[in-house]
Image 1: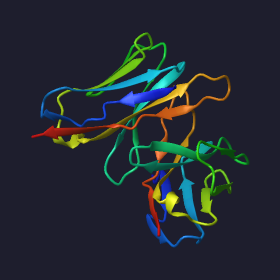
Image 2 (image 1 turned 180 degrees about the vertical axis):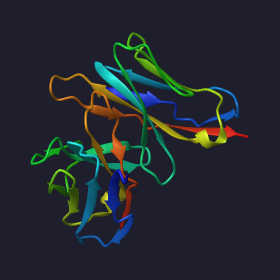
Image 3 (image 1 turned 60 degrees about the vertical axis):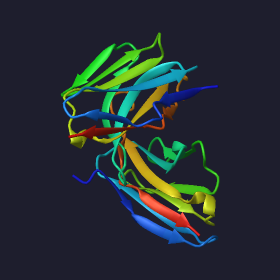
Length: 113
Length: 114
């Protein structure tokens, strides 16, 4: 029972490079989320997908795009990486927000130089 | 302004004692509140959820209380163990029609000394 799987675990990018962070869940959850976590800032929502086929902006969407490829997969793309995007990125999923907690992946530590 | 606050200073206690962590919020109408554990280099792990109309929720050595008058939740770990050492996050889900928001605290670091 894998839960939420994120790849890669670590990545170093040069300013201006692009990359896609992958996330997949095997729990048949409807909703999926992308967060970033920075010291002193806590978890901040980048984008979310309430159900397959829909995506919405969160608190800090600038510089990012997402794709809900199917019910299992939700990817996050950085088109032109900036040093301000250096962070730890977490993918999360949930079935029912009123009864469950979020299941998080183990994170991607991204450094943009 | 709207915010959710947790003890910013680390809490260090002796093994076997009860750890009590606080989560205070202002200017929100809560639907429910969640508590998570986060270990270094790992994602948060869900522990407990308590609804606005519930006063207390228990799970094994964990107990959560929710006082909407005081705008506060307390998280207790009884008979603490060194393995309980971690950062604990609270997250509040607010009532806002169909567009509920999830607001995260910054977390409190707990150290349990053997």
